[in-house]
Image (tube, rainbow, N blue to C red; front, side):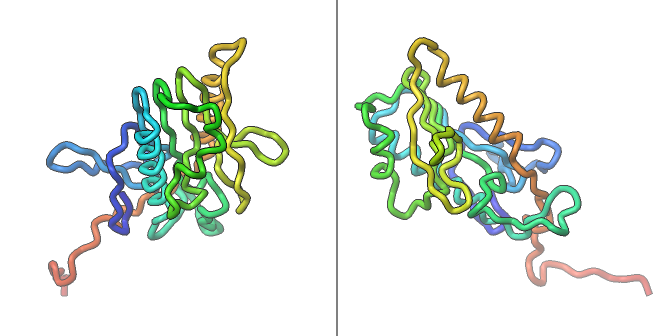
Length: 212
């Protein structure tokens, strides 16, 4: 959730900075995480049909967009020179991942079909970082120089989707996934969740008397 009253749909996985995350918990024991200290969100599925896959990646993208809705972005240490720039720096917002057992539809051209699977209103930078199908491979991105990356875009440049599939090494795609996850989480900038922004007092909600 954000201090601007945004609340995402429920996520299966939330990676967060435990030292910077106050406990927000509803009466139903559902926990809420301030977006500033979240590093990554994820969905975990079994077999995914094409329709279910489309729904999952669009849901992730909408939840990822909330990461930019920070009222007073500041670092957990001296932030006098910090410039919050989520449109150009992917490490300023949390990443998003989808893990499933299998993509249960024709994926022979999946890297070229993703554009049509995302809704028109989804910004390119809000797309998934990684999609791991344990039985099939890993969807990530390729920079113009051929380097494989876990970012949909960087410095206003959209990257092409790529599908990493195992051949002689059955764990090829999982090794890339582990490497990319370390890159995403170790590089993420931890922002300070300003607690007062989340519990702003109601106007005329109370008063204070000061010693004479």
